[in-house]
Length: 474
Ligand code: FAD
Image (cartoon, rainbow, N blue to C red; front, top):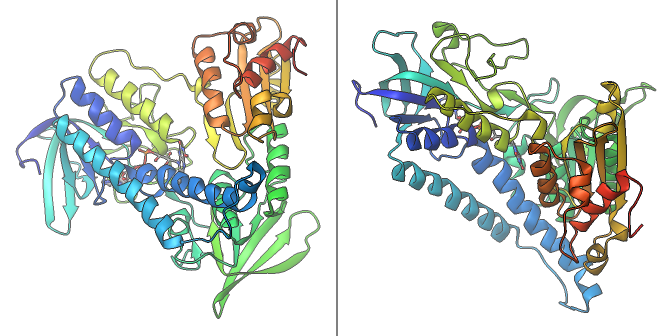
């Protein structure tokens, strides 16, 4: 704990990927930093109940599914494959523990003070900004010249289908089920719902996804969304698109969900053992005392900032899920670094046109930049190149022929505007496109870059060649 009279250069509220990365960068730049975290471990949503545990389970469940369905194709016969869910969960918990304690180690190394407790503005600004830190041990006060709000987000509640923490749950609890649910209904066909739906489907659940819109993951390119729907349906997930979930009632060990088709108005009931509500996340600013210091929220309850992450209060900044933009760990990290570099008087910057995203289903879906629909809406004249994974040698060798790479370039300048991939390892493949876009490169740049053979990345090169209709292998 810091002493009550100590004046920090910077206090950061929240130790998620936005806050902890900002704290480390600030310390590197010579600032005296404290980070306030209400939870017992550092790392925020991402490390504790988000990116990391979900990917650990996605990987484990994929191994299970692979062993059951694909290993024999390679001539490897392992007999009956069975599941030890407890062991799988303990492995996931160990990964989380290693990473969160790793952040504590990095804080120590960088001489960052951790203040454990719930941080809030008192409104007092006499000795710098006064922050109250409340915990079971009591209340302390800390002071800083500047404060960054990095308090992240929490699962959005759904009216009529209230969380009970046991049978009607958010992603947090869906990462810790002690048994494989017989029937899991996922409300919301977005990234989190599809990832966790995939985990439990692979482990043996019947999974039904209820989605109000007519496509999965509404912001992604239409062609990828359609391909993902096709692929997940083939794997056994059931989808009810254009369907609204109206209410939930508990009956014995089951949850009865009333759902209604958006167009026909037809109503029906779904009986589930567990319901995962994954209809989005909302910024977390509750009890922060923002009104005491005068920090404004926008109409979507996100903290309002300018392009330098400055709120309307001169010495208060905000980054990550709590401000506008995609709720992604790497976006929060980049903002944390840019914000702190600005505070320290250097030149931090985030290029929002080159922020990639990944959906870790199988196949993975990843993208960066504009979709074809977005480019057309903006009236940009584009050329589109597409290459199927089925024509890629490595994809054939590893039996991962699903999907394609789609590339969007400006028709006049050839500047790369967007790259969208659905395939095994799409999340890794998209990264070279991010680099090209960061450098303002063209599809020709990618097409003329030598790619190792045989790799899945050759499909990215071929999609670039496809922009000029000169693919070699298709
Ligand atoms: P958070 O990580 O939410 O951290 C905020 C921190 O602030 C928390 O530790 C919280 O306890 C603390 N806090 C809040 N209020 C206070 C207070 N008043 N005082 C003290 N502490 C406070 N993103 C990806 O990029 N890739 C993925 O694969 C991915 N997978 C995800 C899977 C799931 C299941 C979920 C839920 C999210 C996933 N995300 C993923 C999103 C990602 O986790 C968030 O975008 C990211 O964590 C946001 O970082 P942040 O620092 O803004 O906030």
